[in-house]
Amino acid sequence: MEPTPQGRHRLAKPMRWAARAVALAGAMLFLTMLIGPDTTNGSEPITTEGVVLGIPGVIALAACVVSWWRERLAGILLLGTAVGLGIHIGLCAGHGHLLAWSMLGLPYPLAGLLLLGSWRFSTQHPPQHP
Image 1: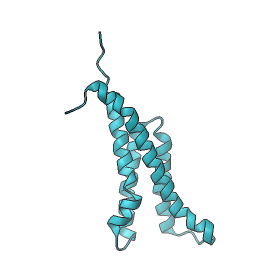
Image 2: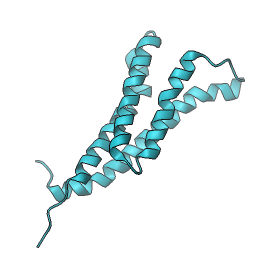
Image 3: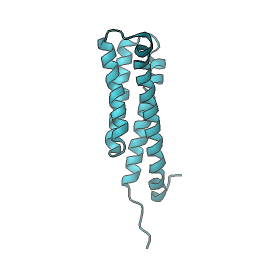
């Protein structure tokens, strides 16, 4: 059973908050895994793979900030981050591509789809009652 237009409009806010929480948690975990070892074991030389891997994390954090004003843009950025991570993991991860992507990349399409759904539900105006 499909929700009514009023139900969709009410559903948009919890979807938006869930997407923000998932995206922020994913981005923080990702950046912690990327930066954490350097702070405890001393800094190592910056490699091309490290820079390329850091870019999706920064984009994901930017999407979390943008999600407060532009849900559609943030959802697209998060989906793009997931695709970028998938390409990077496919080229550089060796064995266990699916496991690596499910740990690092799965929160982003989930949050992106939630934001796009929330944007779509919030742009549909509920019917006016006389």
